[in-house]
Length: 340
Image (cartoon, rainbow, N blue to C red; front, side, top):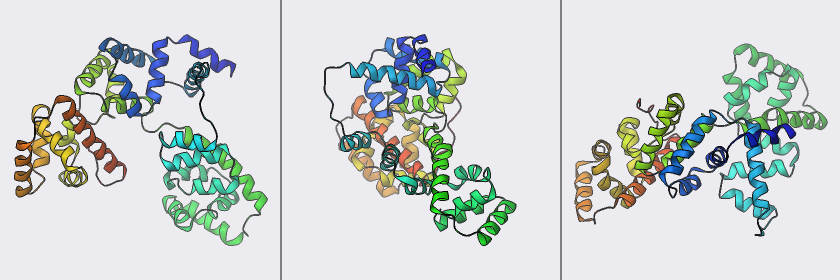
């Protein structure tokens, strides 16, 4: 801990603020970023580009310092398990909240096996193959049948054959053995998995924040980042998805799925304003509805009051949020972003 806390003071306040901002959810961070002036936005970009990467020890040290500042506040906060669950529910998905609370309050080996059952076979297979065959067999027998079969199907034939042979000749392990294995899985696999960043880590976090910025701020941010560090900017751009890029990132089938999923008034506002800032994407989306529906949309847009820049970009961000949700659910596939 001493080594960790010694790292944080080496950073400027701008560096620390950039790290905290990137650790927030995109919606929360964007609500802060869009209200600061250009000078501070550039300072954030500069500070973040100077960091290159943020090790876990450094992130924890900065978070501890931030928490210490909060604790000095005179305001009193409610606590308890119910309040913790309510607070976490506003920041993370339900499965993740339940997993975190289970880790905090134990839950025994049952909690480990339930969480392990949610892990994709490709993620779990390397850990399983690193175990001795009897241990791997004791693990696989605790998984749901469908998941166990999926893991074995993803493995090479030799490993699968050895594991199945071990299962056939070995009785089910005792409760003591199962609990010991569960404890090892918790420490060696589940906890590191929960701490591992998704995708490009910090770069992805910055990209998500940028997705929620007004286009002028977004362009200014990326231009500054490009001047400071072209490699980092290229990595950040991979995480950025804008309404202007939809005609390049979505297939025709994906466009059709999007149009069915977006609330109509939001779509019309995004399309009407899109004539000024994203004509190619508007034409692409309109080409993927029937002629009758396209004519209806055009008539309704003509009858609408002119959409302001703020409302138009807000509607476009809502459309992009739907695209991301559909992509996450596997209903649409996004093409790689265009080169900068």
